[in-house]
Length: 277
Picture (cartoon, rainbow, N blue to C red):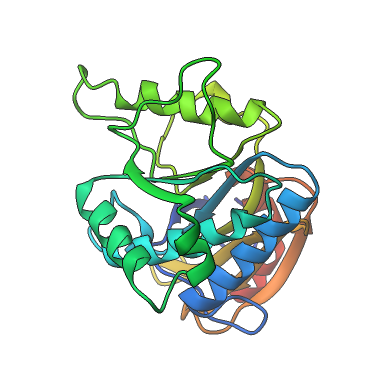
């Protein structure tokens, strides 16, 4: 990381920030995120994509985080699942969730009269289960029209093979008849091969960018800015920066054709970070 010349031994780190962004042209609330994600999923499905992934860095939607809210994630997931009704099939729309509590919340919403469209609810196509318990269909068996699998994560128990079973659901995307969306997988270095080449239809990730330069905030001090990586299919990957660190004043600083890694995000931010310092 390069800082202004008067600072010695500059270095920087980027870490994920557990908060959503707020700015013009960026989604400002969960409803806006949901609307954008549904549009991106629909566009991808209509262009023939069948292996899709979405990552939304909002604390209430992260089953592995301390601010996780099962009811909020259940509503968000059901909202996205309805988009799969555009798949040209009368098959099942299967929602696979991370645990019994969120399954109960989603079933309550599905059974209600004011959330899922009555026609879709009456069709009996929507089914809710846990990916830790639900085995994928055997070879030659009927498959769902769509599967939305939420919050995939490795088990802390070495004897738990639930992730192995879940990979069977991911493999359904290799068929022409089933669309599969992985939402907010938290797999770390254990990303299964089945996800290789999947289309990132929607991504919203926030970062705190820390520059430690020995002079920006006094001896040994640090200055922080906030950045957002946002993509809605079929658009570009857009990098936004709030140099003040307030999370309220973002400007777009880069537009990238492919999904960037951490180093490429830093490269996109570098000139603007120097100005913001």
